[in-house]
Length: 193
Ligand code: ITT
Image (tube, rainbow, N blue to C red):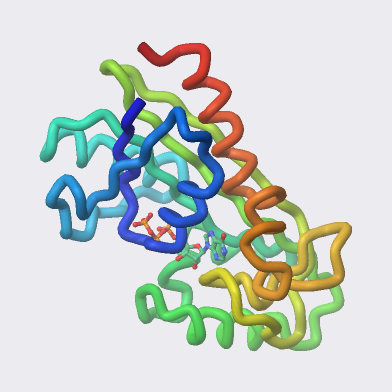
Protein backbone atom coordinates (compact mmCIF):
# COMPACT_ATOMS: atom_id res chain seq x y z
CA UNK A 1 0.00 0.00 0.00
CA UNK A 2 0.96 3.67 -0.47
CA UNK A 3 0.75 6.07 2.46
CA UNK A 4 1.68 9.75 2.81
CA UNK A 5 4.15 10.52 5.64
CA UNK A 6 3.31 14.04 6.83
CA UNK A 7 6.79 15.31 7.73
CA UNK A 8 9.05 18.10 6.51
CA UNK A 9 12.00 16.48 8.31
CA UNK A 10 14.05 14.61 5.68
CA UNK A 11 15.91 12.65 8.38
CA UNK A 12 12.66 11.23 9.72
CA UNK A 13 11.59 10.40 6.17
CA UNK A 14 14.82 8.49 5.46
CA UNK A 15 14.71 6.67 8.81
CA UNK A 16 11.12 5.52 8.38
CA UNK A 17 11.64 4.52 4.73
CA UNK A 18 14.55 2.31 5.88
CA UNK A 19 12.38 0.71 8.58
CA UNK A 20 9.37 -0.19 6.44
CA UNK A 21 8.96 -3.37 4.45
CA UNK A 22 8.45 -3.22 0.69
CA UNK A 23 4.71 -3.69 1.18
CA UNK A 24 4.35 -0.09 2.43
CA UNK A 25 5.47 2.65 0.05
CA UNK A 26 5.91 6.08 1.60
CA UNK A 27 4.84 9.17 -0.31
CA UNK A 28 6.51 12.41 0.85
CA UNK A 29 4.86 15.81 1.33
CA UNK A 30 6.97 17.08 -1.58
CA UNK A 31 5.45 14.42 -3.83
CA UNK A 32 1.91 15.57 -3.02
CA UNK A 33 2.88 19.23 -3.59
CA UNK A 34 2.85 20.29 0.06
CA UNK A 35 5.72 22.58 1.04
CA UNK A 36 4.19 24.61 3.85
CA UNK A 37 4.97 24.26 7.55
CA UNK A 38 2.06 22.46 9.20
CA UNK A 39 0.99 24.30 12.39
CA UNK A 40 2.06 22.46 15.57
CA UNK A 41 0.20 24.36 18.26
CA UNK A 42 -0.80 21.53 20.62
CA UNK A 43 0.82 21.06 24.03
CA UNK A 44 1.39 17.33 23.66
CA UNK A 45 3.08 15.11 21.07
CA UNK A 46 -0.21 13.25 20.62
CA UNK A 47 -1.98 16.54 19.90
CA UNK A 48 0.64 17.72 17.39
CA UNK A 49 0.79 14.37 15.58
CA UNK A 50 -3.01 14.53 15.15
CA UNK A 51 -2.85 18.16 13.95
CA UNK A 52 -0.41 17.12 11.21
CA UNK A 53 -2.53 14.24 9.82
CA UNK A 54 -5.77 16.26 10.01
CA UNK A 55 -4.11 19.15 8.13
CA UNK A 56 -3.02 16.91 5.26
CA UNK A 57 -6.41 15.20 5.03
CA UNK A 58 -8.23 18.54 5.07
CA UNK A 59 -5.99 20.39 2.61
CA UNK A 60 -4.81 17.56 0.31
CA UNK A 61 -7.37 14.78 0.80
CA UNK A 62 -4.89 12.01 1.61
CA UNK A 63 -4.94 9.42 4.37
CA UNK A 64 -1.54 9.67 6.04
CA UNK A 65 0.57 9.25 9.15
CA UNK A 66 2.76 11.73 11.08
CA UNK A 67 5.39 11.55 13.82
CA UNK A 68 5.72 14.05 16.65
CA UNK A 69 8.73 13.37 18.81
CA UNK A 70 11.18 14.82 21.27
CA UNK A 71 13.65 14.38 24.08
CA UNK A 72 12.41 14.25 27.70
CA UNK A 73 15.06 14.84 30.36
CA UNK A 74 14.18 13.71 33.88
CA UNK A 75 16.07 16.36 35.85
CA UNK A 76 14.58 19.10 33.63
CA UNK A 77 10.99 18.04 34.41
CA UNK A 78 10.79 16.10 31.15
CA UNK A 79 11.58 19.12 28.97
CA UNK A 80 12.27 19.99 26.17
CA UNK A 81 9.68 17.32 25.19
CA UNK A 82 7.12 18.65 22.74
CA UNK A 83 9.25 21.81 22.32
CA UNK A 84 12.43 19.90 21.34
CA UNK A 85 12.66 21.33 17.80
CA UNK A 86 12.56 24.94 19.08
CA UNK A 87 14.21 24.58 22.54
CA UNK A 88 16.82 27.30 21.91
CA UNK A 89 14.25 29.67 20.45
CA UNK A 90 15.61 29.18 16.93
CA UNK A 91 13.41 26.56 15.17
CA UNK A 92 15.29 23.46 13.97
CA UNK A 93 18.77 24.66 14.97
CA UNK A 94 20.19 21.40 16.32
CA UNK A 95 23.50 22.93 17.43
CA UNK A 96 21.80 25.72 19.38
CA UNK A 97 19.33 23.24 20.91
CA UNK A 98 22.10 20.88 22.07
CA UNK A 99 24.18 23.77 23.42
CA UNK A 100 21.23 24.96 25.49
CA UNK A 101 20.58 21.45 26.77
CA UNK A 102 24.22 20.87 27.78
CA UNK A 103 24.22 24.24 29.52
CA UNK A 104 21.01 23.44 31.46
CA UNK A 105 22.54 20.08 32.45
CA UNK A 106 25.84 21.51 33.70
CA UNK A 107 26.68 20.08 37.13
CA UNK A 108 23.66 17.74 37.13
CA UNK A 109 24.45 14.19 38.26
CA UNK A 110 21.18 12.70 37.01
CA UNK A 111 21.68 12.42 33.22
CA UNK A 112 18.60 10.25 32.52
CA UNK A 113 16.63 11.08 29.38
CA UNK A 114 14.37 9.42 26.89
CA UNK A 115 13.33 9.97 23.30
CA UNK A 116 9.63 9.59 22.69
CA UNK A 117 7.81 9.31 19.35
CA UNK A 118 4.07 9.47 18.84
CA UNK A 119 2.75 8.43 15.45
CA UNK A 120 -0.76 9.42 14.40
CA UNK A 121 -2.44 7.52 11.56
CA UNK A 122 -5.53 8.78 9.75
CA UNK A 123 -6.99 5.92 7.72
CA UNK A 124 -10.48 5.51 6.27
CA UNK A 125 -11.89 8.25 8.51
CA UNK A 126 -10.45 6.84 11.75
CA UNK A 127 -7.55 8.15 13.86
CA UNK A 128 -5.03 5.91 15.63
CA UNK A 129 -1.99 6.62 17.86
CA UNK A 130 1.18 4.52 18.33
CA UNK A 131 4.09 5.43 20.59
CA UNK A 132 7.68 4.39 21.18
CA UNK A 133 10.29 5.19 23.83
CA UNK A 134 14.04 4.66 24.14
CA UNK A 135 15.67 5.35 27.51
CA UNK A 136 19.22 6.57 27.88
CA UNK A 137 21.67 9.13 29.24
CA UNK A 138 22.57 12.68 28.22
CA UNK A 139 26.29 13.13 27.55
CA UNK A 140 28.41 16.05 28.75
CA UNK A 141 29.61 16.86 25.23
CA UNK A 142 28.49 16.22 21.63
CA UNK A 143 29.85 13.08 20.01
CA UNK A 144 29.38 11.68 16.49
CA UNK A 145 28.30 12.84 13.06
CA UNK A 146 25.30 10.68 12.09
CA UNK A 147 21.60 11.22 12.57
CA UNK A 148 20.00 14.55 13.42
CA UNK A 149 18.69 16.70 16.26
CA UNK A 150 19.90 15.59 19.69
CA UNK A 151 21.55 12.34 18.46
CA UNK A 152 25.11 13.52 19.38
CA UNK A 153 24.17 13.99 23.07
CA UNK A 154 22.08 10.83 23.66
CA UNK A 155 23.46 7.40 24.66
CA UNK A 156 20.77 4.69 24.58
CA UNK A 157 20.72 2.25 27.53
CA UNK A 158 22.96 -0.84 27.03
CA UNK A 159 25.31 1.12 24.71
CA UNK A 160 28.37 3.33 25.29
CA UNK A 161 28.14 5.41 22.11
CA UNK A 162 25.70 8.17 21.17
CA UNK A 163 23.06 7.66 18.47
CA UNK A 164 25.22 9.91 16.25
CA UNK A 165 28.19 7.53 16.76
CA UNK A 166 26.16 4.32 16.49
CA UNK A 167 24.74 5.31 13.09
CA UNK A 168 21.44 4.66 11.35
CA UNK A 169 21.66 0.87 11.20
CA UNK A 170 21.65 0.43 14.98
CA UNK A 171 19.53 3.52 15.71
CA UNK A 172 16.80 2.27 13.36
CA UNK A 173 16.55 -1.01 15.28
CA UNK A 174 16.23 0.42 18.80
CA UNK A 175 14.99 4.00 18.54
CA UNK A 176 11.75 5.49 19.82
CA UNK A 177 10.69 5.93 16.19
CA UNK A 178 11.55 2.30 15.33
CA UNK A 179 9.34 1.14 18.22
CA UNK A 180 6.42 3.33 17.18
CA UNK A 181 6.82 2.33 13.52
CA UNK A 182 6.80 -1.36 14.52
CA UNK A 183 3.38 -0.82 16.15
CA UNK A 184 2.15 1.07 13.07
CA UNK A 185 3.24 -1.68 10.67
CA UNK A 186 1.76 -4.43 12.84
CA UNK A 187 -1.53 -2.53 12.79
CA UNK A 188 -1.42 -1.94 9.01
CA UNK A 189 -0.60 -5.54 8.26
CA UNK A 190 -3.82 -6.66 9.91
CA UNK A 191 -6.10 -3.69 9.22
CA UNK A 192 -5.35 -2.17 5.83
CA UNK A 193 -7.65 -2.60 2.88
P1 ITT B 1 7.96 17.39 11.28
O1 ITT B 1 7.09 18.05 12.31
O2 ITT B 1 7.83 18.02 9.93
O3 ITT B 1 7.80 15.90 11.23
P2 ITT B 1 10.11 18.25 13.03
O4 ITT B 1 11.60 18.10 13.02
O5 ITT B 1 9.54 19.63 13.25
O6 ITT B 1 9.52 17.61 11.69
P3 ITT B 1 8.94 17.48 15.54
O7 ITT B 1 8.06 18.68 15.57
O8 ITT B 1 8.36 16.15 15.91
O9 ITT B 1 9.55 17.26 14.10
O10 ITT B 1 10.21 17.80 16.45
C1 ITT B 1 11.00 16.76 16.82
C2 ITT B 1 12.33 17.30 17.34
O11 ITT B 1 12.75 16.44 18.41
C3 ITT B 1 13.39 17.21 16.27
O12 ITT B 1 13.48 18.41 15.50
C4 ITT B 1 14.62 16.94 17.11
O13 ITT B 1 15.11 18.13 17.66
C5 ITT B 1 14.08 16.06 18.24
N1 ITT B 1 14.13 14.63 17.86
C6 ITT B 1 13.06 13.83 17.59
N2 ITT B 1 13.46 12.61 17.22
C7 ITT B 1 14.80 12.64 17.24
C8 ITT B 1 15.80 11.70 16.94
O14 ITT B 1 15.50 10.49 16.47
N3 ITT B 1 17.08 12.05 17.07
C9 ITT B 1 17.41 13.28 17.51
N4 ITT B 1 16.54 14.24 17.79
C10 ITT B 1 15.23 13.93 17.66
